[in-house]
Length: 489
Image 1 (cartoon, rainbow, N blue to C red):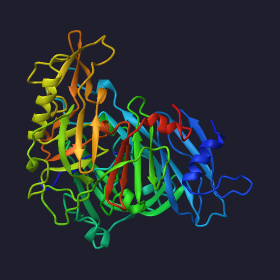
Image 2: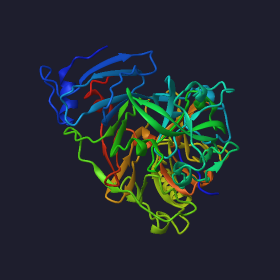
Image 3: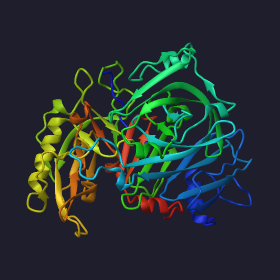
Image 4: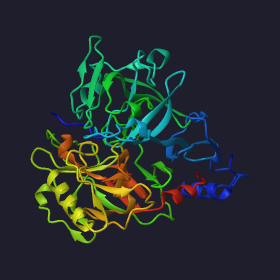
């Protein structure tokens, strides 16, 4: 999610254990164990992982499963490991918002997401179950803490390890400098944060620290926001989660606090399965990744998010036709407007007006003979997508569509097939359903940025290499990648 600027059955199969342990560079011998034994239990009803505490163990490799059902994994560790390691596992799942949550025939739908990626954790002492949206576009992780609300929440009064962050602490004074709205003091001299997002949602509350249980490993002193007020643009989604897990490059993000050198994820486009992995990996079965460097700007600019995963956009093409876009509109200007961000917290992708219009016109031209355009100037899906088509309700597949290529420095992301059009839930015209281009005009949302959302990251292995300051990606069948680890739907 994009922050606004100043203005996401036990398995004993040894082959999966061998894969995991090989890439951890250790042996899988059960007679002389130097690799944690892996036990995988599939369940369909238990929401949260049962934890197994291991003291004095450093997390070096964290593998998480993105499943439409729940997966639990248990490990025992060997004392002979040098250095000591522990493979930690959390379940991740997709949350799909019910069709009924959308207005039946809107003229202009509000900007929101009907699919999010969520992770379930344990927080506090004694531990409380929480579910958080995984979001590479945000820094501060936060939980709902308002006891008067009926939504899922974290109750700080029930945690003996909960500690508010004071205004005079280094955390409040120096580590909140990249927040879009500067931190302030409340009446109790606690550090107060206000976050606002591009979809008009907001969250407000105090910074605090508490114990986060990450796959059975306690991480004390984790900083997060304990939010007691806010506004959501999608209450249906909001009531399924307890908060948000910030994963950008800011010093207070979850990934920065956990100090992992890199993380990767892979989302299937067919069954919402997949996986997300935190830590180093070297999988021989994975295609070589194409890398593009992260853009670094050290000076603060009013419309530039310095903590975002920003890459250099060099061009856009439809089929093999490169759009005639001037270089000046593809890179940030002197105010920072125009950066290109990779964001797991945003569903679709958004382009600045001139680039969007050029893409829209060319895609419209290349599909004029195979698709019927929805001729309704008042219909704008999610407030930013105004190129929509009519497809017969009984039609089981879309025609062959021209691919769209997003060209970065050193790498290219190719988007094709059904990732290009999205069926608007509940929206019909007679015997036709409505499908819209999955790119939107960011300027209609008040965003001065390009955003690559997770819908266009389906079946792409996405690697965020923090040590080398780069993002790598490669086309891959994410459902098959999951199966390599014994993960099946």
